Image 1 (cartoon, rainbow, N blue to C red):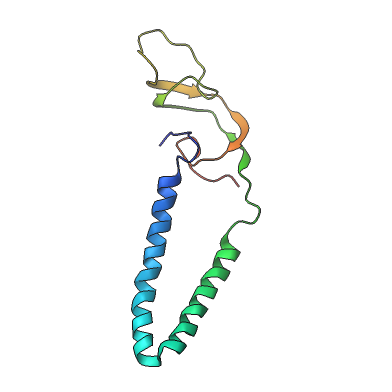
Image 2 (spheres, one colour):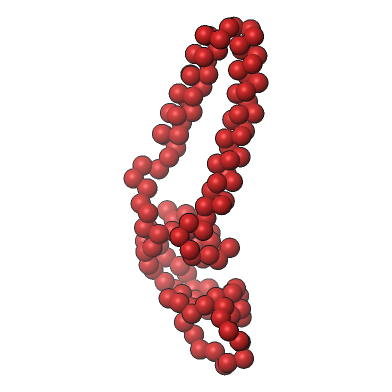
Length: 129
């Protein structure tokens, strides 16, 4: 995925959130029915409220505090092939046989340090430390 549009990673994020929420439902819906039958609705409410509170506390601990939208990061020199247009990352000469943009041919990226809103893609496969 080499898509630098804002929000390009949203489908993957939505899929991950959807899978996680449905996994939680897969566990808590049967638990609610079983506990409701065994303990009654009031006790079941308290058990499920405790589960929700624990989940909220885990999320508060795991979620990065003050996560910046724009991150400075380094790119090592690399050579590879992928469809691209000429932008800040793809400046090089062509021999006019490539046809219209986006071009797809081997090309080189010089080492680079820059800052921008980060999207996980071919150029940013992992979140910077």
